[in-house]
Image: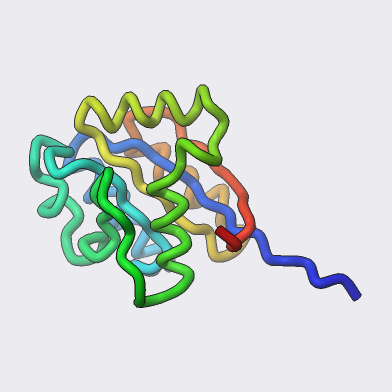
Amino acid sequence: MTNARKKITVVVGVFQTASRLKSASESLRRNGIMADDVALLGSPGALDGNLSEAAGTFLGGSIHWRDVGVPEGGDAAANILKRRAASFEEWMAAPLAERLAAHLARGACLLFVSIPSIDQIGRISEILLRDSADSVQSHEFSPVF
């Protein structure tokens, strides 16, 4: 028997307005996504300085400020997701990473959603695509960092 590691699948969307981020977060919550399944990456000035307000209670604990280390402790899976989100430029294909970095530089935020079941990837992608300011990307990686 092989000791295969479970892969983590994430879907990434770009958000430029608080209203679109709120809409997506409400839809994610209604579709069974938990707060530990998301990581929100932005700068303190993201969404015209309203990222914390736009995140609300559901996404509030998921914010990771760009250029700030991910705190240790807490849920291991959530920390893996936050570390992967924070280091997206290291593991993502260069053209995709550059595009996302450009969005961050212009004040957008990135929402990374860990997909609990591969059966949900289409539905979660649709939710993000409806409100995202750009295309939605999906990525798969090993939980080992």
